[in-house]
Length: 173
Image 1 (cartoon, rainbow, N blue to C red):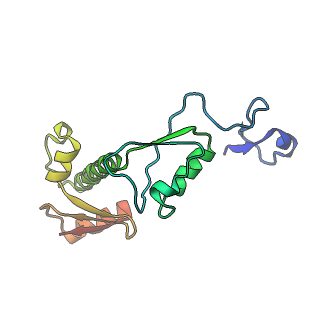
Image 2: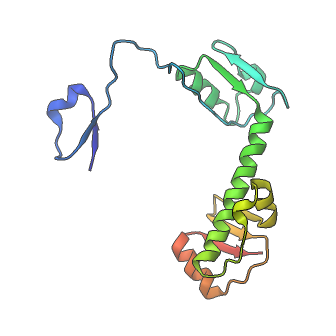
């Protein structure tokens, strides 16, 4: 098993095996990347809609988005060395929601394939929106469940088999 160590810990490696050195080179204390890009999706209580907002270091993001929900992510990105945060909330939220719906639809189809019940042909030719519309499901992350919103014929024995394989609650609507 590999472990992490820093230079002062060289003489204290207690387990045999591989180690990764995680020290940085040089004396610079800044955390910025030369040409790095960070995408951070956050939820705000208020703020501009359908508008790209650019936040520079030192700008008070709480006056634009508030300080509730997940806006502390903006603070962490700036602490991490970002000099500018570009935010276009609505488009990004819509895109990630469509992508997640498509992924959930694919998961539902793979579950059906697992028990030999999949009949989805041409799925690879569908875009995310069409895939989610044709094979709608509801994924509940808290209860670890997936509910089929389209017709499928899974017997209780097959549902038990899939539940055991996926460790999720499989529900047919």
